[in-house]
Image 1 (cartoon, rainbow, N blue to C red):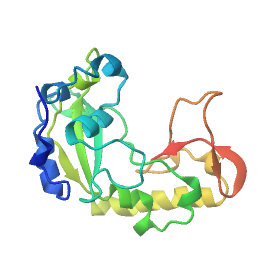
Image 2: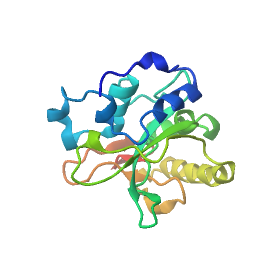
Image 3: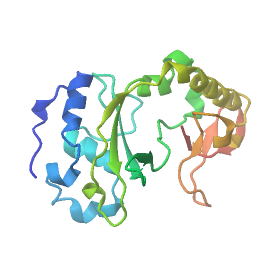
Length: 213
């Protein structure tokens, strides 16, 4: 455990970023970074993805539309997996790509959409989800990968994106549902309830739920 030497990776090189991420394989964040100063405040309440960005890679988490490693065109995604009885892994939950901005979406084209600009190339870090462990004590398995949408899947992903856009253009963003699409699901952000913050949409006065894809 100790401080990370971030000079060991080049923020402009996807392969260098991936090599640096591989150093986490089989370890927990607390085993490679001194988390003692923040452990009491974070514990199970923190977001591991944000912790990895800040404490391991040295980038400040934010809600920018740009990639986390903008100079390399790489977006970092940290996601949980569960171990199956055969020794393999399965996803703990869906992977969130980006927030849907209803006001901007209607002016976008697929090729240069905020979704494609942000997620064209992703570094996927997987951690083993086990209850009873502090967030930073969860082990990274399997090995990280650089991921691009497979060409065979891009057609359907684009169709899903177009469907979401068309629904917003028709003033029905408040009717969006994850069941509308095949790969790219519009999923509610937050637990809902009377305090849920709703968002304006461009072609209707009806406020819509905050959604992510």
